[in-house]
Image (cartoon, rainbow, N blue to C red; front, side, top):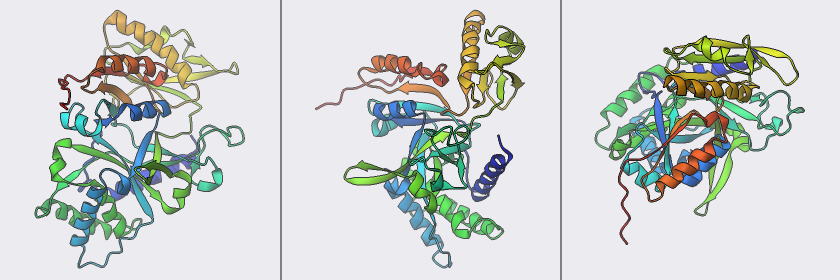
Length: 392
């Protein structure tokens, strides 16, 4: 990866972390669940991307208004200009994956998708126009140059982490006001962000405490005014054109080098490497006949029993070689090693909701996701909540 790209990524991370003080926000970097209908699920898996809604046009738009009202009440004696040059777009998750109220509200006849957010942070917003001039100076190309890859999606990178929603209600704003005061303090020392940025970032995470059971976690993205034309899609729903953006995981640009990290305490990685047909002496043959080294690194930053391949140009080839032997190894040793791929949505499990033909839907999902190599090790299970027919 080029140095200027790494510098840009580091700057985005620093700016995000500066605006999201650890004294105020609670990051939830673990497994999260996204409840959705089957129609939306197929779109997520097929496109390997999320649809993030503009918060003012989402089901939770009233919650945004609530947060804004609390902030205005807090700032009523301060001269803070809250006009901002960006919009908020969000994807919502829950900490739990089998809550009856969530099945009823968001996923009737649908699924809950389990994501591993522990090592995520970088995301790519797809450019709907695929024209370089729209986001000049802010683009990362999918592979090499635009001339060589005219059909590749041009993307805008963002840094974000899932943050737990803050629950509050009128007449009991002690905790929220305490956090506003911390932001007021910290904004005075910032040379990079305005006071309105500090306060504005908090609004999308405030929700009425009546929804506390959901244990919601939100992934929020800012889209600046000069980025809107290139990345915002308008989707017609209920007579309105609702602004949305498409989010991919990681950086679109692929690495030339190949890196495999693993954390498998009871697995001899050398034994795995030695038995992979396409790999000899830690080399893999490229399409042009040349050979590239594969770096195998042990890491505790990933979960035990996992092997992760970086987002490289030969990722599928490396995956196929690894997965073939890992499956054999799992069967012989009665273990459960899993191979994941960076650069794709970090889906780890799919729970089919409580409804009539759930077993048939489970089989359909299992069959379909095997066409996506990066989902080969994803498990599909069925909710154990009893299904009851709605009385007419």
